Image (cartoon, rainbow, N blue to C red):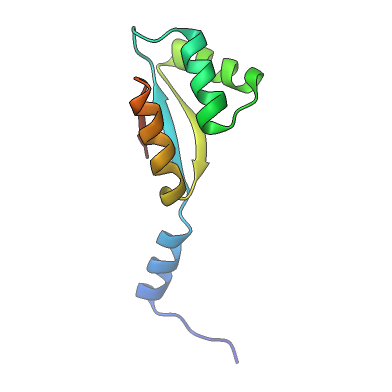
Length: 90
């Protein structure tokens, strides 16, 4: 026999495994080099990946730079904010 889960249990489980994103937003302050260096150091990007993200932010106004669970992304997002970047966990 399989176990039956209530809607509330399913909602809680879905919330626990929900994937969040750090979204980086364009600004007129930070240089490409600064953004790239922050993405490499803080988000563990490869340099080429960081450069591509910087261009996407520049051209589109925003870019998802990291995905994962909220508790892991929040401190990374705070580090980006402390470096003067505009970012948000969504």
